[in-house]
Image (cartoon, each protein chain N blue to C red):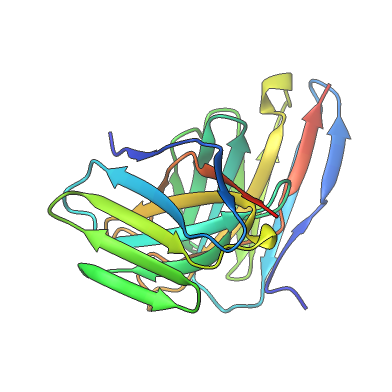
Length: 113
Length: 110
């Protein structure tokens, strides 16, 4: 079984809709991250969480919100999706005992029409 | 603004040759350095980490770090067509956040 899972894997939605992307991990890691990847722009950090009570904005948090429901679950929401949020979204985790090393989930391909 | 620079490529090498991928970074206090491999449409997969100056070898992969020059590289020996992918360089400063380069696309020609 995969250590980091993301649902859904693919999603097509319309402008203005609310979307939630979910991430679960069985690695036992404290830290979780959400990234988006766009062609030519690389990976950009949206939000990160060091534990259930600690949520931090990343480089591009506008238009997004997150919820850390448990140590193993970290959700990303788009309250009102817009076309320029079309991208590949990755969840990642890291262990506080292994400096900076991050492991990625399989990704969600989101298309906003 | 922390920056990680990579040549976007594509870098083409014949099968069996050595592929050399390079990365420079701007933050002098960077402490950890990673190489990820990403196949098209897939997630980044960690293949090497390095924390100290010098070389680190793992199978056909060798990571090289020179903190004075703010330079990290990845050598892939005996390149195979299955190595064809985009390679991402990532740099950390001990804050549990990483800064990623935009990646170098490698193509290994049979």
